[in-house]
Image 1 (tube, rainbow, N blue to C red):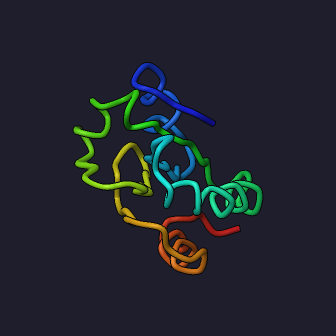
Image 2: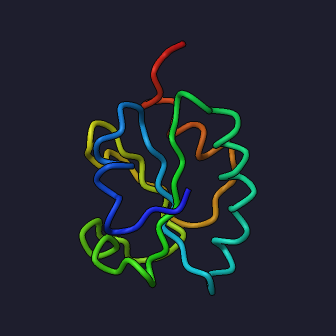
Length: 106
């Protein structure tokens, strides 16, 4: 799901479950490299984790507000706060290890 400055509060900050926010841009090659991983995580953690994307070129205010200095950056949001982030194209296992801390138990 693509989110923007208009619906970010509703989709991310007000979410009852943790949210993984993929800050990306169309021209970013590493962003395209991790896109399949992000889609896999969305399917594998359906109902436990919401996965959204923010195009930083089109939503520069969000990028500034959350201190996004390089992309891809994956922000982990819980209860309206960015509690962790992963910068760069990393393996799926690295993302899962970070996410485990924030996901609700079954």
